[in-house]
Image (cartoon, rainbow, N blue to C red; front, side):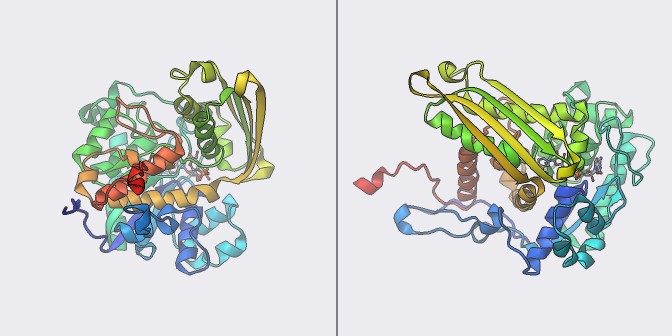
Length: 441
Ligand SMILES: NC(=O)c1ccc[n+]([C@@H]2O[C@H](COP(=O)([O-])OP(=O)(O)OC[C@H]3O[C@@H](n4cnc5c(N)ncnc54)[C@H](O)[C@@H]3O)[C@@H](O)[C@H]2O)c1
């Protein structure tokens, strides 16, 4: 039978990557890509660079690298810039973030020092703990959106990029709920002209990108594109969107362990999670408004994985608490503790303790790389681009975006199957169901 292949245009020319925010995550990502391009390091943690995909039957032994199977942009074709409220160039910002050692950074210093952040769209109302000078001025939020579009077009021209991706690596904004201004493109644009307080800076970046047909990914838990107006704009302009909140550290562990407990029908009474971290992200999250946004994102994970409504005997009323404590001496090297109270056969209690000495941005950087490359792939594939939300990228997020009438899929293993089956689908390969009865005929 002839394979049904889906149209994907080739990744010709350069891929322009613009990060909103050039802090710990963004600089670790950019420095890492350059170090890898210079053969100084390996892309550990990146599915697009190191992952493989099984095709056909297990007996066929066809397992190409993902990057050889789908037409992804090459690392050598990526060009970078971004915005930040602080004027430090990418080298200075990376040194301040303190994630990578100076020896690593000095090896790519010439490259990093050339990347200087553009003035940001920022308002302290939405991120209370920060104050920077590298900020745009504009009469209205629409005026600021237009300035961002000019930045995007200017970067496209200057760098010679044929395609672009914008990714939010900026701070976590205060907790917001969708309101009337977010309901339609018309109400949103009216809100931009009237500088409606319901429109946060991250939404202005997203609007600017989508308006130009550029994909937009959201690495923070901010509401940003998770509103009907921006869904609609994404679909209308064939500009893919995905989010929210990179799945690193403690939540990554949760979505690895909780599906295992549920698979073996082990009950959970309580899950207490606490963290200490001392980077700028920790400082921002010390503000109750930003913390609430993060808390919502972190809390939803267990509820969806454990499904207490379907398994009331095992998970009804389980107690879930998440704490984040700003503790400067640790810098970016976070420590996350989990105490999990579980119960087994005949209700006998047991406990699991996790102490994860984690480097958050080391876990986040490969996610940024994969998202940029997969969003560019989606953009080059009309069938994917016109769908707007890219739910197949849930694998990378704490709080995955999905169609309004769906619940998000949080189980890391289901997310991976979904991602790989999407890639098989795009290349006209059989989807893998793991049924496997044919081996026994
Ligand atoms: N580090 C991780 O592993 C991780 C995991 C999940 C989510 N996140 C989220 O990713 C984001 C970035 O994390 P980080 O550790 O790099 O934080 P960071 O504080 O080091 O960097 C964020 C940068 O964004 C800038 N910024 C804030 N508002 C801005 C705006 N409106 N426009 C442009 N720049 C702006 C800040 O000045 C700062 O330099 C945070 O929202 C964080 O919650 C991080």
